[in-house]
Image (cartoon, rainbow, N blue to C red; front, side, top):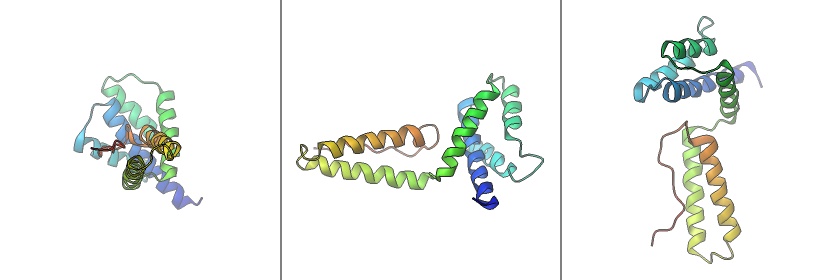
Length: 148
């Protein structure tokens, strides 16, 4: 990976980190959370504002939020992995809508012959929801049940 790719990954990570800090720790929501997240991401490119751990620590302390540096670092590490996976909202939404559509189609057919595929699809969808959707995105999550 080159330096430019590393920088893009860091900016993505810090945007996700900003949303996590804003919504989960600092009780900031909506446009204010987006603004906080964007400021943290843009700060990545400014040497004077690139220490996001200190920024989140300072903001948490000012808000009276008790959390350890170890927790913040753990979240930073997890989000760096996610940022490297390039799981954008648009990409996740496309996957999350396609998989249930295929699953619903299989359920409308002979469910015995598709039982394993249906179970696998529903497990994969749950994994995607738990790993990439919860805490990060806010679009409606699709269902696999068939409407009669």
